[in-house]
Image 1 (spheres, rainbow, N blue to C red):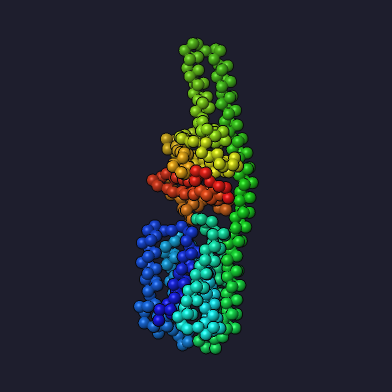
Image 2 (cartoon, rainbow, N blue to C red):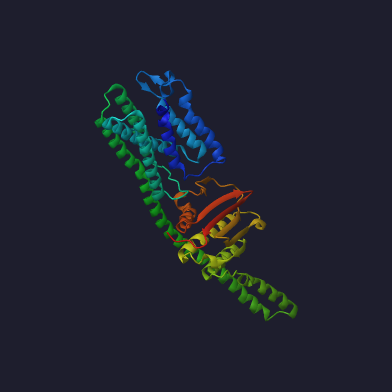
Length: 422
């Protein structure tokens, strides 16, 4: 009967809700639609479905467990996620589905419902569960964020709990008398387990906030170092200028003309600082231009700073300053000076404000969650900058994306024209 196959469809729907905000693999819909259709139809085409002799031992069947594992393979095939994430989401989906099943069974037994009426209640409970999962994810899980389940004990606990729920539930319905009390205790136990499992989102949020605070402190220290380097550049140029001016007094007319031309070139960088219409943007560009010049890097920019007035000064420095620091660091690694070119474009595009930055990057970086993964030892700290930029963009309802193609790394930010700060 069709309702017997409803278990695995419920599992898949809940898993897709949890994975909806994860980064999708290429040809996502081409991957998802045929595999999901085959997955949903599988129990119907196999003789006896979940209770096929091939997957049944005595009173116990592996059919439901096999479908749960196949659902994990399906989401892993469609989304960019590691094995721990796949296992965790499968366990959470199974727990949610089992709560729906227990509520449906209690309602059926308490009110002595007909088969059709009981199925309607099961669909209703499933719809409520999906709504609650969606609201939970919207409040706890920002767009494009991922949760890295580094706690192996939690994942092991999730696997063990899922197996216990599966075995004990099937044993109670197959070998014991199924009662309202048993279903209620089963449902209550699953609800407690679900609270424990989903608490990983709260823990990760607290860890992220702590990481941001630590990152801000380190950024402040780095900013002092950058400012010191900038002052060193200015002092060095002033020192050179003093010597050249002193030498002018003892030069012939021809030599003086040549030396004056060199002086004009020396101060050209100060005249070439862009005027964007936003004083804070101008300061950032001037400081980063001096830092780039020290590393023989050229910054080519077209910037309408007036369109960035909605950003606070702190957020502007964190976003634009961080992006240019990363670009300068990457460009400085290029052996050929001719390739040390950074392109910056920031201007309105219709109802959006766009920021686009390109810098040379010989080796394609590893991406996770749409962001490049640092290859430095302290990954939590050195990966903080780009992640903090994404959080900042989302604060103003913006979107940050990164990419790499043909030795060029690109960063794009899109803001609504008049975003409301969150």
